[in-house]
Length: 123
Image 1 (tube, one colour):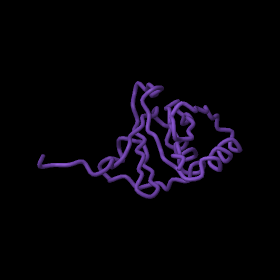
Image 2 (spheres, rainbow, N blue to C red):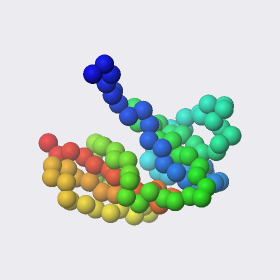
Image 3 (cartoon, helix red, strand yellow):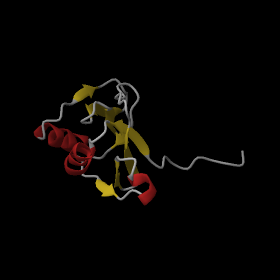
Image 4 (cartoon, one colour):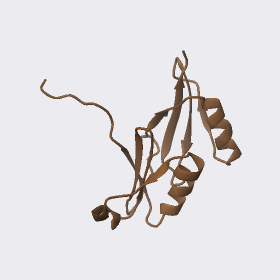
């Protein structure tokens, strides 16, 4: 082939109109992502973008809004137990799942009900 895929540039999750502050609280304050300024032309659509390292999450406004309950991003982390403790201390419900051999993982829902997988591969 003359082309190749290099990486995922970003993940977009949907949210209801007017929910940018809720996204900032969850992705920014709770998970520690930095807000990324959207290009001027895209600001009028609403939503908010976040990044940490090479990972970007774009929260896009969708009306009517329907949360993603099955489809989801999966984030690989270091020190999953510390993140789990942090989320519990911030009253974020955790859904533990031990069905992936070689990994510790759990799921959380963002404030809009979108499913997010968090995992750490066990060495």
